Image: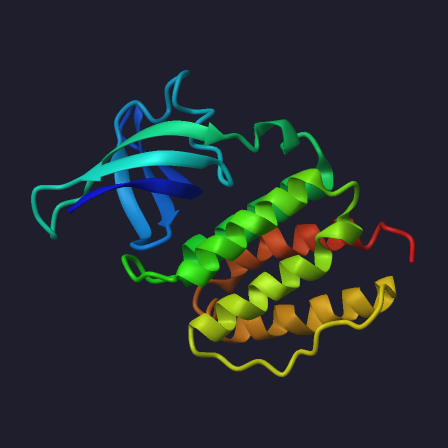
Amino acid sequence: MQLRAPAIVCATRPHGETAAIALLLTEHSGIVAAYVAGGRGRQLRPVLIPGNLVQAEVRSRSESQLPFARLELLESRGPWLSEPLPSAAIAWVTALTATALPERQAFPPLYEALCALLEAICVAPSARGWAVPLMSYEVLLLRELGYGVPVARPRGEDWNEILAAFDRLGRELARYPLADRRRDVMAARALLRERLARIEG
């Protein structure tokens, strides 16, 4: 495997003493798992924040070998980690993407939509600016995976209606793509739901 492309960091896990395994979403190769030497070190730890956009160079000698990746930061989500709502939203959408999508299967619409959603989360003045787009991303993910969902997009800006649609969509996500792993991943969505509920209707 040889790949050089922009990628969204969706998840990381420790590997050995200093390395990390990163799950990267690329436009034309989908989710790619790669070994990042020194990924837990001082220089690369800020690069491997979920939601970050990176330039990834991924190489492996065979299809069965875990690829090695060199990453260069293009856009950081670090400044939003201290903001309760944006940080919870970024944590949820990246965890959902990393967990639900099969590896090395391209989903160009999801890549484009996630890029746009992450940008909206970071630039919108409040969650009212990205809550419905976030649900649209969830619906798109379900449809790209072959699940038809009977959840209508909220009409207007009624916050209680938006939260009700958020809850209905959460049940569909837990029932289908996250059925085997919902406890761990849905906890991130539950935290986001809790924080969204604090917004006054």
